[in-house]
Every structure is written in C-alpha cells, then in structure tokens.
Length: 146
Image (tube, rainbow, N blue to C red; front, side, top):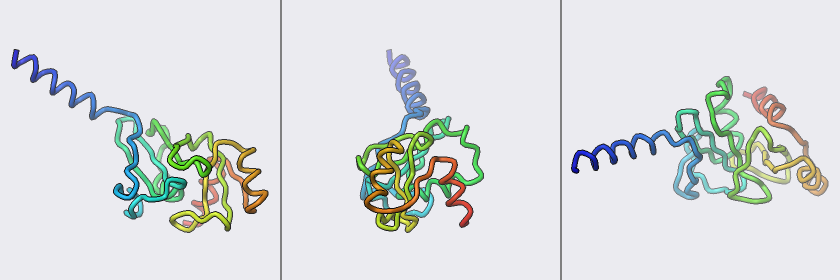
C-alpha cells in the first residue's frame, strides 16, 4: 500500500511539473523575468510558457518582446499579453492588436498596450492617438531599437 501511495505521489509531481498552462501572475509579488522589476500593472503584463511547461512572466509587453528576440517561437506553447481594456485578462499575442500611444504609458516606457481586436484599437487611438500593429509588426518595431 505504501508503495502505491509513493508511486502516485511521484507521478503527481512529475505530471504537475510538465503542466503547459500559464500560471496566474501574483501582482505585487512576482518579478519580471527580463528586467527583474515587480509585476504590478495588470493592463500591461505578459507571459510565455515553453512547450516543456516553464513559465516566464513580464511586467510589460515590451519586456516579453525583448526576451523573445531571436528565439524560436515554436518552442512556446503560450505567448500572452494583458488586455488594456480588461486588465488581468491575458490574450494570445499572435491574435492581439497592439497600440503604441504616447498617452497610454506602459511600465518600461514603450507606451505599448494590447487589445483583443483591431476595431477596439481603432476606437482607443481615435481618442488617444497612436499607431496600430499586429504581432509581427510590433516585434519588428521594438527590436529595431535594440
């Protein structure tokens, strides 16, 4: 009986270590895996999860983009960013629409935010000004400044 319990516990530990799902960000406690700042802004956080299940959390979308520079994105099962209009809600970066607006500051100063679709982004920049980007274009825009 003890042997069965031991096998169960070891199996549970192994399977939980291979979890490929994003982990919740503990705002005010978790640190950014790029710049080491504490993650506090729920509207600008980001996260990636490797295909092996390792989570990396970021205080700003720009930190995630810099972290991913020259990395093979096929090695990540999730590339997520927070929604500006639904803080704390993560959306797929490859499906998100990005905004750079001088009237919407982000934690690391790139004025970068994300929303779930282009229409929502168009409404925001109508009031705030700025430019709209997709995932490929925002990576190019930010990485040219590295």
